[in-house]
Image 1 (cartoon, rainbow, N blue to C red):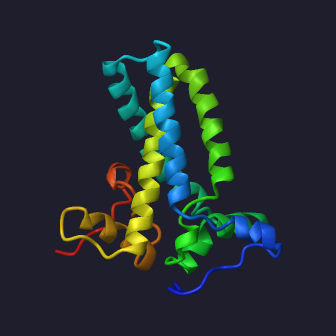
Image 2 (cartoon, rainbow, N blue to C red; image 1 turned 90 degrees about the horizontal axis):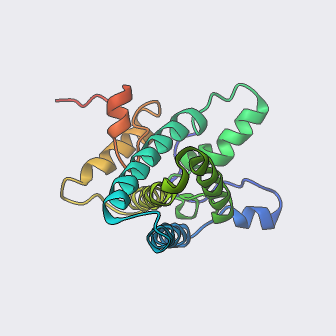
Length: 202
């Protein structure tokens, strides 16, 4: 199917479930920025973080998120639909976005789903990093909020006339030229490192 710049895919016959798949972008961005801030405040209040460690852990969490964003986009959202189950999962999570890239209400996962996934990452990181989790998850969730903002902006607005225009170009290549390249949305860093950077004509 060629991208349709009007309308929206129907994912569920049940009207309640269908409604839950539509999300105003401001809701998840606000939720995760508030949680990230709360984690930092908690870390400072109970002595798990100081300024230096908070900055380092926050940046580490942000970097970890950028890798998770890339890997999820490349290997989960673009999984090969080798059977009906995978086909349905792929289309529900991401294929509908490629069919209707201008559908502004489907540029973020429903908050209930993303909160569940964020909770999973919190407990995994808690097992790995211990008390450092407050700084790392704060950076991780900030990275997710930034990803949501960038993804919304590149689909909803014309590109700016500055260096940020490259994010619009990068994501447009993924949607309209080569869906097997340019998986990074908030940053092309991992495309460059892992060999999926699209070639640019000179």
